Every structure is written in structure tokens, then in C-alpha cells.
Image (cartoon, each protein chain N blue to C red):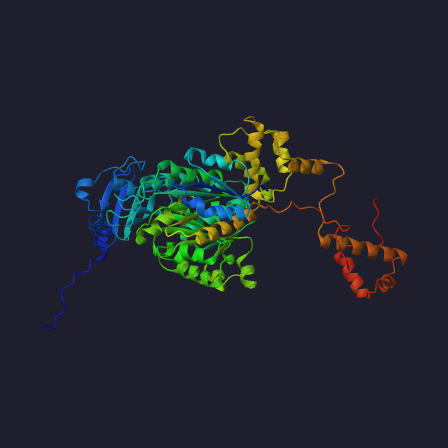
Length: 151
Length: 445
């Protein structure tokens, strides 16, 4: 299996800086993408991947929402995390979370974002994804002559 | 103070109980459409709920497509299956609101005539929730458009298949979706549990609400608890229609209890769980609280793995990438020889990789990964061992052989053969009956 990767589409450098230490520690790849058009192209190779998309809830780009749907359709094995950049009134948060998860996101994060929270989330997701992509070995006949069998 | 009873409305005699009288007195908002999809009747409760007047709207035709109709008609329009004679229930945002609340919950009952003829439709409307104040964090319109487009991809057509097992699976899931029956899906990794849960959501009465799928494995409990039950968590809203939990046995028990409480509450979501094991197994080994077995797994369904559905491979491949050329017959033969332990995830991955290697042409065997081609060569080799027999089969054949040898050495005397085998004679006779051993062996004439 190839090295896991985190692909980030963010409005500024803050998120990338928060993740860099974790990514280096686990020897994952961190790809920061500035053009949304290039985002989906980062997942052509089969490897455990987390896609992080930062969005401004006051002005959601239609192409960004379309990327979420496309990712869910074409790469269901990839975790898509939506990061909302500014606070949403609490009574609307549930509605936004449900709507984004329904579109195909795997997780939604709201401020305040801390490094510990981001690290826990990414580590957890990467464990789940690595497990998901590790398929069991195809069945074979039992070979009585093999192994360290002792009666 | 007067002791006389308050005047009450005269009870109508049975002959006065026309349908319009009954509907007119009902507090439920009711409307009736004729076979030409025109509004023929609506009661006072309907006029009050919708703010529309029957006198002005009688005879107005409901549009075929929801997008081209007025907001009121779009919300009230029966789904297509109603015109095919099936009762249906839908929940839609109130007219003028793109997402709700408030929600309009409408139950449709077709009036069937002779044959396939639909004489009309009776519908009952209920309203849930209060409107969101203006200026709040409103969801963008694009979300709703994309959601409708995405939902259209998840229908029961995905489960089309000629086998009785698939047809039964489809019928069970359809019933569970319509009745909001808590469902436990068992299947190997990659068999499409989430896809089926989404199909169920699309077929249920809450199809206009949200489908939420949550991975429970690997994530720290506080993260899941925050998303579900924290400030502004999913449980604080009412927009989650179906909650699909992947492997809920991975959740800590206190979180399982909270999920169970939410799933069984009146406003809770329709809970669908996916697991590798039957619910009874997870409860028995102590990984799952018993409430999941008693209340949240009313229907338990096993999803067949891909290796049991290899005849349907061309359909699956067309579904994964409809715009790509179909694989050649030779490639299909190779694909069918493989056991697909990773199921649909593995199939999609192979199909995706192969497409790049094939550079746009139809998939041929040489484009397939080496391990799949090798498996095909081994399977098709004349020296390939037969499938591993079960342990029972092996033991039975050994027992048969031992009994036959003992009988042959004792010239067919069963008492001596039994002594040689360390058995009593009666037991030897029972084993000979069970294994259908005849002595002396019958010779072919």
C-alpha cells in the first residue's frame, strides 16, 4: 500500500501549519492545493487519503460543493472533512452538519479548531481508512504440511 | 348556574355520512385529486394550513415535474409511485423554504379502479417544525440541488437481479424503509452497506431529510460524542432522517446508550447499522448493549459478497463508470475467476486502475493486475486441486474406508469388525446405516 496522504484545500496557511507536525511524524504526504480544479486529481493513485476542504459558510462556492459530491461518488474510500472557517449560530450548526454529511462529507469541523482536535481526528480517520483499504487475502486451501503445527 | 347541557352538534345519521362530510369535519388537512391530477376537493383544515382557497384552485392541474410547478403544487405533488397505485408518504420543506423546517408530511392513498386504472388520490397533510428566522445561517441553494441529483443515483434499481435471494433482500429493505424499521446490515467489508442504507433512505417517508453516515471505528469517542450530542450536535436538530452507523460495536457503551435513546425517541432518526457480525454475536461477546438487539435491529439482513454475485459483474462495472467501454469477454472470464475479498471497493479500485492502463479502450485480460491474472491461470490449470472439502466430508470418507477395510478383513462378520474397530456391534450397524454401507458391496451388473 502506498504512503497515506492528506490533501488540503484551505483559504490560508493556518490549517497546513497545524497539520505539518503530525504529517511529518507519521511520514504521510501533505499536499496543499490552491486551485480547486486540481483537487480531485490528487486521488488518482490508490492510497489512504483524507481530503480537507475549508469553506466560508457565508459564501459557499458552488464548485466546492460539487467537488464534495464528486469525491463521494468517485472515491468513496476517501474521507472528506469539511472545515467551516467561522462560527455558525449554534442553533443552525446541526442543520449544516447534516447537510454536509448528506452531500458526502465524512466529517464537519467548526471553530474553535485546535491542533489537538485536528490531530485526533486525522489520526483516527487514517487508522480507519488504512484498515478499510487492507483487504483480506483471497481464500486458499488448507495446507497440512505448512505452519508450525504441533499436536 | 345552568345545569342544562351545552348544545352539541347533532350527530349525523348514517345516510348523511358522505365522504365530503367526513373530510369537511376532519381537523386533518385533506385534499383529493382526480385521475387527471386536478384538485377536486380540499377541506377547511387544508385551506387553513396552506393559506390557499379551494374555490380559486379547484380544477388546477398538478404538474408532472416538481421543478416547473409553483412552490405549493411542487410540495403537494404526489410522487410517481402513487400514480402506479402504491401508497406513499413524503416529507418536504414547506413551500417557499428550500430546506425546512417547517416540514410538510404528506400521506398519499391512490384510489384504484379496474385493472391499472387510478381513479384519484386522497392525501393527508401534516406540518412539523417551526420556520427558521430570516437572516440566520441559511443553507445555500446549491446544497439542495446537489442533494437531489445525488439522491437520484441511489434507488432500488441498484439491487435489480434475477435471483430470489436478491429479490427477497430488495423486498425486505423496501419494507424496512417504508416502515422505518431499525435495520442491522451484515456484510463483509466493501459489500455496499452504506449504499444500501442510502437507498433505504431514498425510499422512505423521510427522503427529503438528511442521510448521515458515521464511521465508528478508529475515531476517539469524544469526537463522535461532540458531533452527535455536543453543542449544535446532530441530535439537537431535526434534519437527520436516517443515521447509518458503521460498526456501532466500536462505540463505547455509554455512547451506544445515548445513540439508542436518540434512535428510539419520537423525533429520532431511522437507525440503520452496518456490521461484519450478527447483532446477537456482538451482544454475546459484550461489545454491544442488549438494547441494540432488542430495539435497534428489528430487521437483520445479510448482504451477499461480490463472489456470490459474479454473474452481475457487467452491471456493476457499468454502474461504477457508466461512460467507459464494457470489458471484453476474456477479461470478464478472468474477473469471474477471482474471489474479490475486498468486494466492491476492490472491484472499483481495479476497474479504475485498469482504465488508465487500457488508455480508453475496452478492458482486456492483459490490463488486469497480475495477482488477478495469476489466480485465473491457477484456477484454469488442469492440475489445480479441487476445492477444499469440508472437515465433515473428510471425516466421513475416512470412517467409511475404515469400516469397509475392517469388514473385508473379517469376511463380512460384523461382530468381529466391530471388535476390531473398538465399537459395539449395534453402533457399527448404526454407522453403516448412516453412511449407507452395504456388505458385501454391490457389484455392477
